[in-house]
Length: 202
Image (cartoon, rainbow, N blue to C red; front, side, top):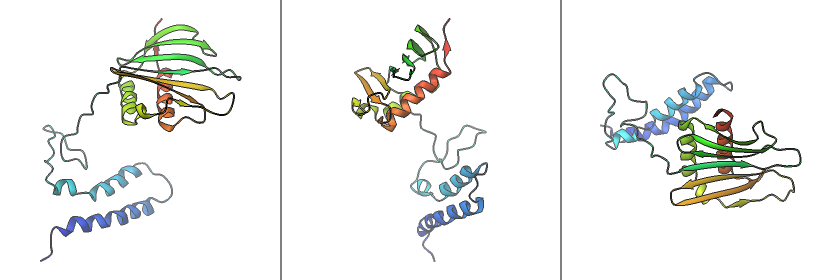
């Protein structure tokens, strides 16, 4: 009689082969649903959670469990960030120069200094849900561990700043264009994107 405990291990060995088969069948051209198919193949090869005694799915009546998840989905913790801000500085070619500070509820204040549509002091609101995700990214990506300054040796690289306020700490990171770490760049660009879709007060 074959040992049933060996089946999950042999199934896991098949996962790379099945994944390769999916890629070969789909070819080099991207197809709608291609990643969903690949995910199903890869996730199907991980029965370890069930074997480890993870509780069965506890979906509400009439609802189905998500593929590859046995228990109820964990609720992500609320970010501790209370304020987050971005500041862009001027340069020889006329870069947009402004400061925007966002509160956790989605409200923000804005001061436009040069080369922007709105000069002077303004305020408005951004999508609080999307802002909360940016604040979560700040914490999950380790913004607090970044250096304070990332300086370029070039004289006219525009500089940007990102501010993060926690209840017990404030951090401001300065980075010149071209030398900013990916974490800083992503957070700054997400804040600028939020500002693009802002609702401005009259």
